Image 1: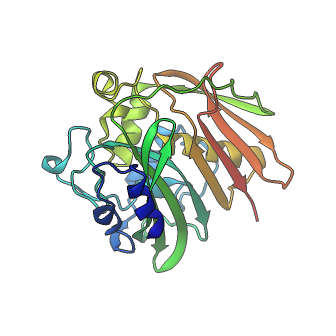
Image 2: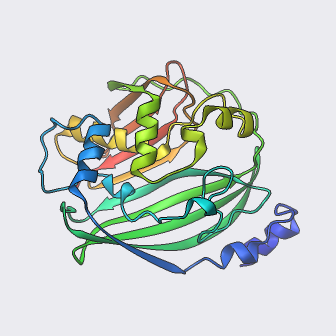
Length: 291
């Protein structure tokens, strides 16, 4: 707690109530959902996986992002499409929410038709002073059990920041990598993924809002969507699904059009992956590990 008192002393928090933010730490929520085969089919269709070799009885990797999402009433959504009530309430000074990254470990397959329970716990809330201003980082841990068997553990990193766009230093173009796959980002792809994950954040489907209110230059491509594409790419390259997948967002991908999935082997037999637009910097980077 001393670390957070020092942040207040340095004037980083302004009107941010750290006590209220940290009240969510260690509180658990639990949601249960039965895996609907129709939802799995829609996920496969969204990513053009209908003809890919896979067990019909096992959900595709990272499909769990779509499971056990809170069913928040439309009347309880804020202007940006996010719920106005939740486990952690962003301070008024930092209303912009972004999924900054995470780590996923796969323990056991999730079967189609099985009952999945997700236990969620906020484990840390901290402020950080960066060149772009004050940021609020929230760490969330999820544990998913499929028919009472541990299937997935996940760390999710969320960041809240100012509503005003901040200038960024020019970043070098992303490296080409040893392998590359081109993906066309379209409005239907972004809409379908938002629907699959019950994510009403308007930056992903409402271009006027994303540009005029949030200050982006186009629609924002979901971080988890990019992570899912990279995971599928890693699986295709190595012929089997990774056991551990770590990813983080370095820069947003804005607007529609072609993006690249790129990869290269690392020294420890892991696979490094990243997304980028033509001549753009690394957007989302990831590392895939196999046992």
